[in-house]
Image (cartoon, rainbow, N blue to C red):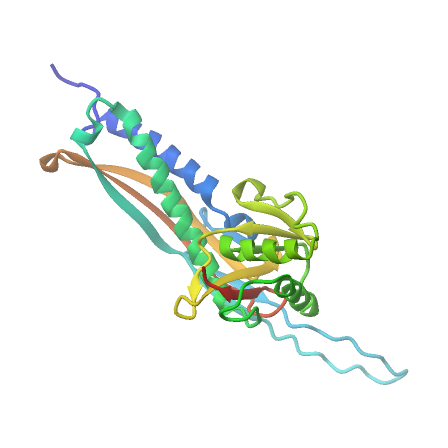
Length: 287
């Protein structure tokens, strides 16, 4: 016999398998990623570049005028932050013995976990960039409190940040905040309203959407967790640059009797506005 459709290299079966796995990886990655919907996004997938320059306008001030007196010119010196996209990826090897009798369906759980891994990488990268914010609230080694939450809001408002605001907290921070509010016999918080409501949104508190993520980084030698409060969307101080979404390839290793599943993506991230109107980091006790 000849021309069988299989999952061997260069066959139609391999292409079909790769397409199936790729779709599952992409679906899982988009379903699990919390941060991209919350931050400033630049899609350069159709452009011949790997970098994006994010400009920042200075705060200009108008003044009173005197009749018949010439006005003086105001200098406008813009600053900018360059964010470059780079590769990230993961590879696993699935043996024939493991897949024996399962067919292509046996690849589904692996594809889903690969998508989750990529989503976690993206979220962890964006949340780590919050360390560049100039302003910080909370006390190292102390549980998060309602006062910390209110202080973060005030910091943004004092910096003329444009709402609505969103806060991303580690579950331990969110738990401490709930306990602090419950101890005052107040309502913990209202119903979810964030665009990422199905991605970890817990609800709203003082008009701020609350999202939780275990990818909030450990800081201060694992003494603390770092969350972040910031304007939602294009006003956020964090930026995500997308060059190419998850791409999946299958590579056959005949001598090992196994198939390598390689998942890669090209993206960039960074803090493009470190001032108070870009965001504030929330540093409180580690679990």
